[in-house]
Length: 488
Ligand code: AMP
Ligand code: MG
Image 1: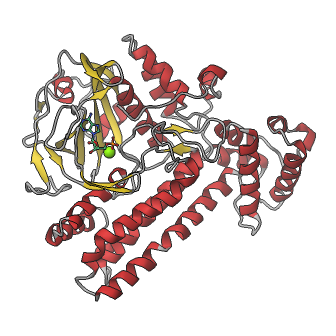
Image 2: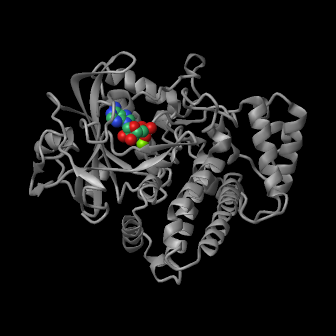
Image 3: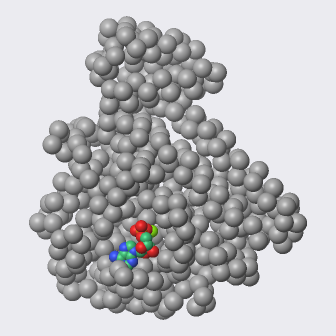
């Protein structure tokens, strides 16, 4: 298995703990195909051994045997404070399949579980499953989810809940926290091995560079800058952007109390344990930049292999300054596209920011507003635009729509082509909290049909899907503010 460092200072052999009478809660045939799993006509693995493997009850199915499952160690900064050693407290890496790593989340205690029970509950497992697949379909880099396996075995959280195991898949689950771990121990040889492994498998384009480690840092930072811009463009809040939850591949990982914005509130906090709003929507770019600063300091010893101390610091500092530039470029590109703008005009940033401010002031639904914007025609009359009704300050939004209509005159695309382009970037369907909650409540009554339906709908977020129109709607009033707990 090449994608994780081996040796007992980097990981520990860890077997999953069995769970009683497992059953399928959710399954993603498209991830199964990535792994070359054979499926039956019901879309589930034809070999029932896979249910036991994904429950953590056995290690062999078909011709595949996972010979040495492991839990890996990492450290990290949590809520801005150095937390020291963490590690896979409830994730066990079974092994790799078809070049991808298969990890079980919630399959029991590991050497890094600390006070935790190593388990995950049904609700958080369903949320991770659905969001991973939804993000992938939105074109946003993410770990994938193969399955959720449930059991009647109970676990104690704020109340008694039932356990579940989420099988997740990624090319590698290496995090910024892995770099921080070896840096904090001053294990420069291991730090170098980790960076070399990243270069060899995931950033080959940096290997040839004169300064491969600097180039690696820049590439990781650029991927995460782009990722954050993509999150902002669909209104996704991660919820816990601790450095141990930030992928070294620029993937969205470790789904916890995440949330998609319904009505646009720029300072929305999705994690109800985040009292200070450190991980609020509008702070995500700044926080990701901060995480890249953690990576830069962890990688400093690697730069010092070829440069003086001062030179290494200066190089990393200036590389770190590229983050806000990369982020701003991606953000502008994405929001221009959301407005259907192909050419670049100087006033575009202002046009976008004025719109977002107005949306914030009137708490306009983020996803459906942008989706609806594609219906505007270059010769639309202001009075024809139903979207105006969603804004409290009508004079202000009328001014904005006037400026937008004027701006559209500069664009070459026909109304129809622009709408098609916009509908490929402005999703109709996102994993709204209330949709996830409804599916979870049914699943808690052993009805998994809603999870399956959501998987199907969210796998095609840009399509109209007339039969599922109601799933594109903002939440009903009584489901607008579902708080998501960190305890999962
Ligand atoms: P998270 O905020 O979910 O990324 O978790 C932070 C750290 O706590 C990671 O090292 C997790 O593996 C660990 N952790 C979270 N929940 C549990 C649990 N139920 N049992 C053991 N470790 C856990
Ligand atoms: Mg985590």
